[in-house]
Image 1: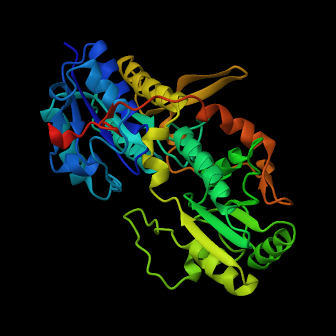
Image 2 (image 1 turned 135 degrees about the vertical axis):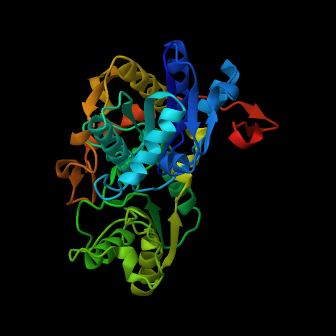
Amino acid sequence: MIGNVLVGQSGGPTAVINSSLAGVFKAAKERGANKVYGMLYGIQGLLEEKYVNLDERLKSEMEIELLKRTPSSYLGSCRYKLPEYSMEPEVYEKIFAILNKLEVEYFFYIGGNDSMDTIKKLSEYAIIIKSNIRFIGVPKTIDNDLEATDHTPGYGSAAKFIAATTKEIIRDSLVYDQRNLTIIEIMGRNVGWLTGASALAESHDCEGPDMIFLPEVAFDLDHFFEKVKKLQEAKKSVVVAISEGIRLADGRYVCELTDSAKYTDEFGHTMLTGAATYLANKAAGVLGCKTRAIELNTLQRCASHMASLVDITEAFQVGAAAVNAAFNGETGKMIILKRVSDNPYQCATDTFDIHKIANMEKKVPLTWIDREKDTVTNEFIEYVRPLIQEELTPIMIGGLPRHLNIKNK
C-alpha cells in the first residue's frame, strides 16, 4: 500500500491555485495513495495539527471541477516563515512528528518564493534525519517571479483580468469632453510582469495605456508629470498603468511618499499601496486636471470568472506532475513549465532543484522594457499573449458562479 499524501497552500492565492490542488488530489488517488490530507492554513496550520481528509470532501468529478473553478485557497493559506533548523530544531521535530503520525510519505506545497523556501528547508532536514518523506514544490504566484519556470500558474489569469479591465477603464475615461488622468495601480513589489500585461489592452478597438511603469526601472516624478502634460496637449484622456512597487532613483517606493502607515508581514514585506493615489493627488495640483486613482488590488488574483483556460489547465498539470515526480522518487524539487513552442503555443512540465529557485526573484528583462516610450516591447507582449487564451465557463447557480467552500462540508 502506498503511503499517505499531505498537500497545502501558502502565500497570496490566485484564480487557479485550486486547480493545482485538484491536480495533486486526482493524480495521487490515481497513483494509489491511501489517503490525501490537506493542511489547513499552510505549514502554520499544520504546526497546530489543523488538517482535513480530502477523500471525504472531494468525492465526485463534479466537486473536482468546482474546485478547479473556485478562486482563493480552498485549504486556507498563511505567510509563515519557517525558521532555520539550526536555530529552532523543535519546530522541525514537531512537523515531522505530525507527518509520521499521519503516515505521510509525500508532501506537496503549492505556493511562491516563500513556499519554495519551506520545501527547501524541509527536504534538507529530511536528509539530516534520514527520513524517506519526499517534498515537492508546486509553483503558484500571479507575480510570475519564480526562477527556472517559463511562467507560473496564476499569472495568465491575472494578466487576462488586468488587460481586460484596463481596456474597460480606457473606454470609461473617454466619456467626458474634458482633460483627465487615470492611474491604474497594479500588484508587483519588485517585478512588473503584471503591470506589463496591461499592454495587451492595445488592439484594433483600443489604444491601450499611454504609459506603463514597472519597478525594474527607476521612476522619475518630473518626467512623469512632463510626459502627462505633453500627452494632454494631443488628447484629453490619459491612462497610465503603474506597479505598486515603483521606486525613485534613491530606492524609496513612491507609495512611501504618503503619510499612511504600512503593514509588514513575517517575511518583512511591507504592504505596498497608495502610489496611484499619491500621483493622482499630486497631478491634480501640478496639471490642474481631473484625476482618478484605481487600485485593482485583490481583484487581480480572485477574478476566477475571467480565468484563462490555458492557466487552469497548466495549474492542474503541474499539480499532477508534482505527484508523479514524488512517486517516482524525486524530492527537494519544484515543478517547472518549459515553453516548447510559441506557434502553436505548447508547454511541458519538468522538475528543477529547489535550491536553485528558493528566495530568488525573476524580473522582467530590461530589453523587454521600452524606456523611451515608457511601455513594454513586443517581445513582452508575445510572451504573455498565449497565457491568457480561452476561457472555462463558471458553473452558474442563480446567475452567479458556484464555488466549493471547505466550511460548507
